[in-house]
Length: 289
Image (cartoon, rainbow, N blue to C red; front, top):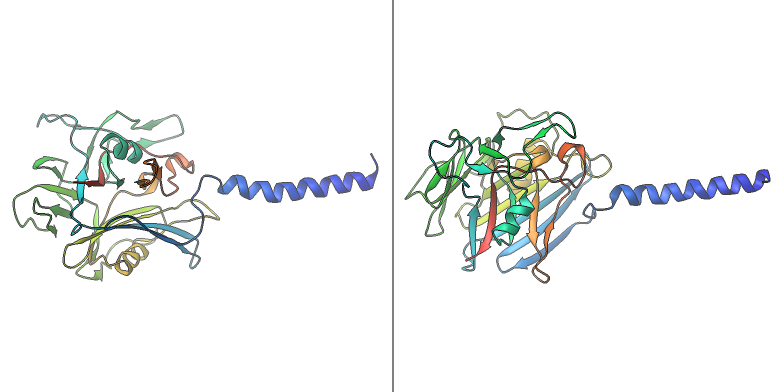
């Protein structure tokens, strides 16, 4: 083969790699395009893309509980024996939304046991027994190891943060407050950029704000600090908010209103693999009444 032909072939191959490489890398991830879509009455999905101070793709789901068709749902215990140390079977968020016929869901609180030493040595797998770190209530039945910052839901569709103000009905906890009374919490460690999940509520207690930020994916989304997550929560109207489990747990799932297909809306990254969901202990979901 002549030298010119070899050079031409090399240029073509290089151009092909330049085109196919990014296409393969970004395939399966949500497009880095901002959007707003009203999926169901009272429920809106946003995708927000930040380029500074680093690449960050955020997924925001808001639900107005004044819409009579909407209600909340939290993962119920699989074992109700009070002496059972691990009352839950681990599930991915997609399994949670599918199993309980919900219209949306995000991952919930941190949990134990958990480890991820390498792609083969990790826990839990779907179905493995686990328990949440924080207090959880599902229609009055409780589980969890300790009481962290908690959001309470009442049978009359009211919501309160931090303090129980009626008969216990549903509740979910997180690791830290990130917004309190419209002010970002400033005394938290804030030097790590990571995938994040948070849930908040507006001042009147009518509108829920759920945020998942993708992370640990260079050239797509590196993640957010806690203070950046708090600012994002405030921007979308969350006057009080708590930090849920993050890292490889961060996942948002929505049921397509036209096809009924259950879709992962973000790019989770369990065990360092983009698009791979982690099985977690509990979840927070939205359903039709």
